[in-house]
Image 1 (cartoon, rainbow, N blue to C red):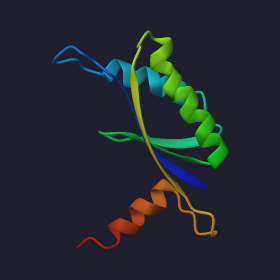
Image 2: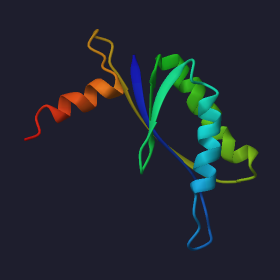
Image 3: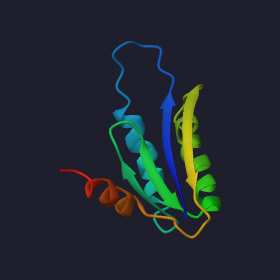
Length: 103
């Protein structure tokens, strides 16, 4: 199992432009892939987990959403944790592990 932290941002040239509507459109596309990946929206990015091949397929579909909505420049940041030693952990397991060390 792999995990990816992904941020897709259409380049906006206007000041004070909100991207909430664009993020919502990207998450509508992500909802179509619930059978392949699990995901969690964070304030700065979206974390998705699943088979590495599925992650790449889903990421490509997500990257294309702003293009389909008329944006001509998109910045996509991807960070992947692909653990293949049998010790893969889910989003929930990783958060629980951190929380066990909190006072």
